[in-house]
Image (cartoon, rainbow, N blue to C red; front, side):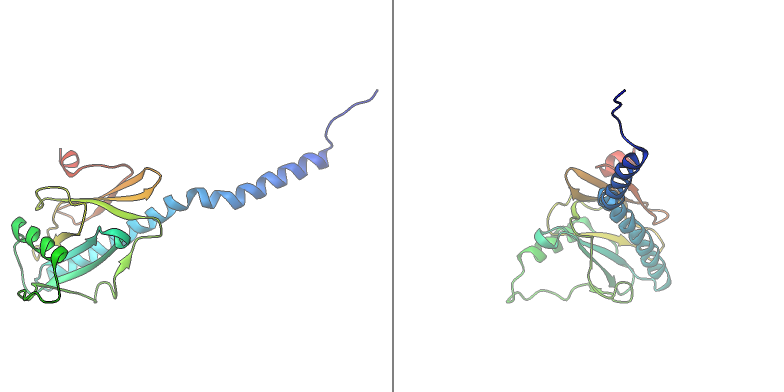
Length: 198
């Protein structure tokens, strides 16, 4: 009888090749998920630090998120001397002034200055990620261009906010800032602040 089939060695070689491909390819498949989770942990740590500093120094801090062009994944922390109430109109005017500023403009000194005790320099989201939309309780409309601000108050409260982060290929996550605890949580889909507050 002439039997045709695979020997045990041939089957084991094929399984070894498949296992090797899985070991090499699996990290690439899960890299975006790993990056967004690492970014979320960084934001959770950052928000706790900023909230605590606002309380300790009796000052208003804000997290600045850049949504413009190639820098749409950068963020930093700014501090004001003393508590400052958030006025939606003044935040809107400041965003407009930042967009249209020129070297010759005589503008009043800014209320906020970059605080390097929290972040030593401008931080960046991982490659391929960007801020696409920010909604805050003080903004009348979702912010999709320019700079967006999330305020941390001396009383320990944080401005309610929803920050959408895109990783391309229709991957969108939403960072949600709880106003009472200052905690930043992640939702693995695009979500508006109004939907979250319901």
